[in-house]
Image (cartoon, rainbow, N blue to C red; front, side, top):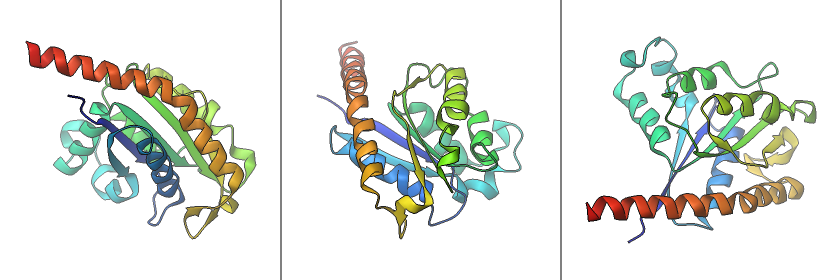
Length: 193
């Protein structure tokens, strides 16, 4: 029996509604259309009051600890963040500072970001890839960057962006399938033991 993959997205958006969350949900849906999975979206803006004052993971309330555990136990991770002063938000980095350094090893991570203009598009390669390289995660080959004009009422509207998101997921599917078969084999070994 094959269990659905655990697909978790982390949105670094600080507001609700959020373009980062909308982008994350779009990517989650594209992946879910291709493989059986359980989806979960972590919205950092909603966790901010409980997260921002903690220095150690032991200081975090259970609600934040559960979200961290979901990220660490995910089979596939989607991360989105708005560009703030040339990088991801401080809260985004603060959240990932609490993730165990070995928890994301070999985990496929689809990188996405949104900003006011195209001039911030390199955030994916200059900021997000190095962060997830530290975790030894497998950042997927194609990132997705959106600008404010790509959205209408917090929904993706630009056809080129929609196509890029579809292509990013399509190019990620071989690794996602590999993870699915790997997690199925692990589950079968556990049942047999």
